[in-house]
Image (cartoon, rainbow, N blue to C red; front, top):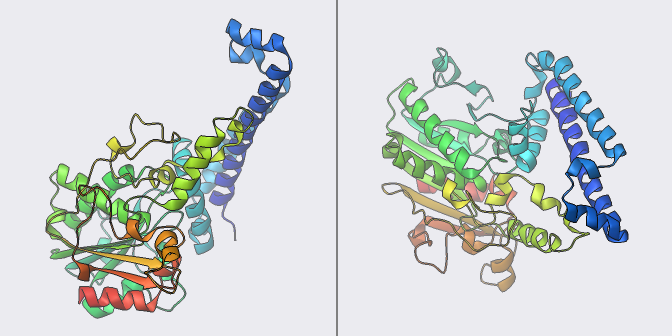
Length: 400
């Protein structure tokens, strides 16, 4: 069943897309017309305002789109607030994918599909740290909290995998952890999610039904970067929860960027250099979260004042691993042997081995961990790290 909230958000996004495509088409049309008619170039030089050169057809399309957007909000807002079917797994996964691609736009446009950061228990129920019924939502609360943080375009549902159990419940049975699953908008800047996670973990620890003795964080892909960002901002703000952080595990996290994000940035940069190709450089319209993955930005300083569509060098501020915490890295390669050049270059298809292992030519950026605290798994891709028995067994061994 498709929820009203999903229909509302999708329709709003479709209208936003219509407006964006109209802008692209108009830009292309104007470029062709200017090149074909020298008089149009003179009008550009004269500095006429954009509206004076905008075609009547495009104005009609944009006006109609604007009217439809206002009508959509008026008619469906009240239904979205009471729609329960939006929490069905298939709807959650659709929303998560859209948030990864354009989540910053969804948030800025108040689209109902924009995900607000929240914790979930093993049953998928929302956990509100300040609520009076916190004990009923986590009746098995133990002094050991485990928080699992998903990656780009994913949601808390993906930790369930295809087996009966999942990593959270396995660690609950074996080690007595109480697992919580973070759900968040992966299209936002990693630093924005990191700051919010830092604050939410503080509230969670302060309101936990029993005294917290230990906190463990596990992040998959982008989730690992959000964890590192949260640790940095928590230390900067002198929050207390990092003192409880005993373990942090990173599954296929692109600590120094993801190859696919780098390739998309290069393609966008090249296309923008050509007048006719520039309007179709669609990667420039992807989310802030995706653009952060090019180098693995963790802080506001890594992206503020920088054109992320430009082909610029790595300006990141070095962020060391949080002291006093045991850090574990897991990487994967689709190849049969780790030592081969294809395995090293391709990694798990999305993240190269050196990035997942924290290696870097610059010693200030290199993430130093003990050899026994990282593991590379062969014949596994990026998503299979979430639900693989061998990977789970290694994590259980580390945390035993």
